[in-house]
Image (cartoon, rainbow, N blue to C red; front, top):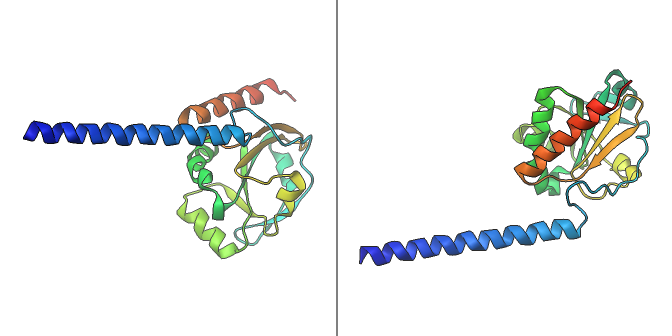
Length: 186
């Protein structure tokens, strides 16, 4: 009797595992169909236009402030409807902690107080700017988030990268980021 019960549980666990694996493959297929596979760059940008946005404390941030850094990684995200942003936030924080590039988050949201709460609860540690009316994202052609854009001190776009779901994809992004930073000289 006990062995039959144990076999039933094992079969149930295998079935659940296979179902989750199937759902994962379906999700990967959707990302590929949406043009989000590894390394695909859909935004055609040469440089980032000058912009001014307020940070979460209400201070004005000017894009010219990025000239103080050899490289800046702009992370565009939408807190209200971006589950993959939560998946990627550990990657963002890791890059921030390694201090290889200046990181600036640019959030499309409608309410500053909600955005502050979301950033705090999500444990995002780098500077976040408030793109209240989505003007900057729209001017860059960003419709889906997250999007990471690496620029040099002159605003030249060196890399545009979409969502990275798996640990492997995130590690590949870090390697690609390191390669670009080492390759570009001033």
